[in-house]
Amino acid sequence: LRKNVEDFTGPRERSDLGFVTFDITADILNGKNDLQTFRNKNTLIIFDWNVKQLFLYLSAEYSTKNNALNQVVLWDKIMLRGDNPRLSLKDMKSKYFFFDDGNGLKGNRNITLTLSWNVVPNAGILPLVTGSGHVSVPFPDTYETTKSY
Amino acid sequence: GWPRSGGVRGGAAMDLFGDLRRMNKRQLYYQVLNFAMIVSSALMIWKGLIVVTGSESPIVVVLSGSMEPAFHRGDLLFLTNFHDDPIRAGEIVVFKVEGRDIPIVHRVIKVHEKGNGNIKFLTKGDNNEVDDRGLYKEGQNWLEKKDVVGRARGFLPYVGMVTIIMNDYPKFKYALLAVMGAYVLLKRES
Image (tube, rainbow over all chains, first blue to last red; front, side, top):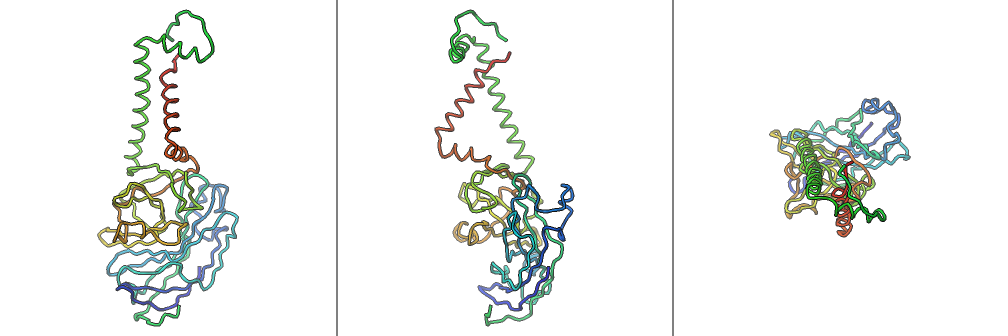
């Protein structure tokens, strides 16, 4: 997973709004990501016969003065069985507005972006798996007022 | 089995009504008790599930298409609602909006948790363009733990269709109950 970040935040209704652009490179089929859950099933391949789809999402996790833990989903994608399991997305903008509950993004040095997915089986258990590899992203100390997003 | 009295026997249906007439009071009470026991056992199993999963409704049927293509109308979901399970982004939760009876199955997309454990979160259906704020109560922007019926842990496709059909066609429900009741009351143990 590689990510780059664009750098401005803007206050709206007294809450910080962050803008992030990112690249995602992930190889889901060959398990460069978490294999443990699937070793138990004697399969190394994530898309086995009982997997209908994966719901992938990129989430930002961070702490602020207001809240000990914040998680915001920035982007998601549904990957059906049969779709290309290799992701190589560049310069993606977040699908959803990255609002903080308060003003905790300004100067926040440690926002962790992680790719996770929900395995939806044809029938059975619904596990949530987190990919290995995550990136820490800092936000700057100042707000930008020009929105060239 | 109970001894049969003599008599001419016609087809199977005649047989059944013949049995019913021949049953004496004791046999009838026995069958009714049998029936009551089956109903009680089913209720006990359901209550047991409620205790074990911590959810007031451990098995729910998906009613809308807002989580397609993962879940379709008629799919069955199995829920848990353990108090210590934190609510995290990406999880599928079943929640009730205050004042409404119908539970909604959507995904958590934002979580803000305070140090003391207070959580507020936002949900959205996978198949919807916008988040659920339009579904919440007037002026409500976030959901809290108390609104959660449970977390979806497992699922079976199609099985819940029976419930939807029974809801949409009450005659079907009564017919089904009548058949089941007749079967249990008239079944003879040999």
